[in-house]
Image (cartoon, rainbow, N blue to C red; front, side, top):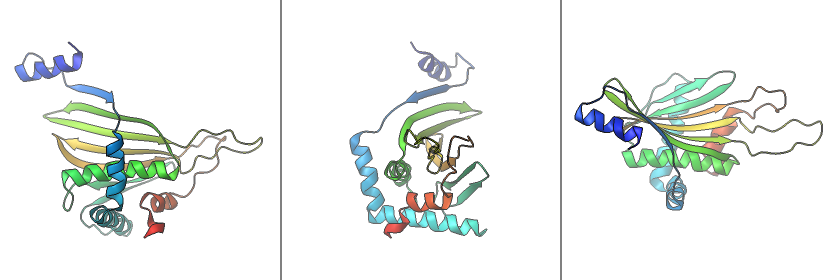
Length: 198
């Protein structure tokens, strides 16, 4: 029997004090990818995505609206998090997660991984699903620097005790001298939310 299953059974039957910790790679079906793209353009998806973007801009002006948006801003990393609350349902929050991943592919990123990590923290079970994207590999012309687009992108969905908690999108830039400067994060946001097609 594998260690993960042993730890779960131990928790259920009280024979272990070991904390549950499990990580696995997984993939989306073609249907899930198609559904995420379709949802992004649907009336429900469009309304929720516009609300998140509006609340992101409000937060930049120190105004809090629901669903709450939190901003991460530093020299090497920029991003935001969206709290799971009205008007999201579990289903629409999951679709938002998949839609942001699908948008990263449309921007030109390559998916490096999709994994799920489950761990026990105190009396709670935390689940983190994470897409990780990198710019496409390329051979620059002699004397030219490598394009990093906007940097590496992580799209993560956090759940606590099997209930969504928040979703995070974080872009980290390369500081290596081999790379061009990252494109502006504001441009990434426009691309992610498909602002040009409004």
